[in-house]
Amino acid sequence: MKRTFVIAAMLCLLVANEVTAEFFLAIFVGNITFADAFALSFGSVHLDSFIKSSAVRAIPFTIFVISLFYLKTRSKADRGFLWIMLGLISTSLFSAYWGMQHAFFTDARASSTGALVLFFAPFWTGVFYAVAFIVYSAIIHAIRNKQA
Image (cartoon, one colour):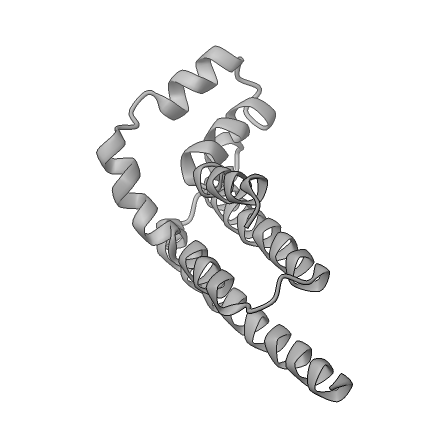
């Protein structure tokens, strides 16, 4: 796998989290200055808590890494599928965390069950990716067998 793809995957794992979503919400929705948004979002983050919360967030990325080893060829279709799915995993996690915390920066009421997003968003994103990968593998397998 190319180095740019590995770097992009690691950056997606770091960026797609609730702290980064809170930071961007504070800037774009809450109209808070950059320094104040940084202090609000990252002020109480500790490395041990970040690593513990990353364990759940890593579910779709772990399935993603397993699929990298499963793909036997590195055709353009395979690489395109992996790049698209990496983007979709990161986008879905980030948007889930954005939606969970959006009410904190507006007049809307926050849901008492909003924290469930911290577990269920990575879980269902992983399930979605696993199903998408199985369907993609079946289609590619059928196409390659038809050509042979």
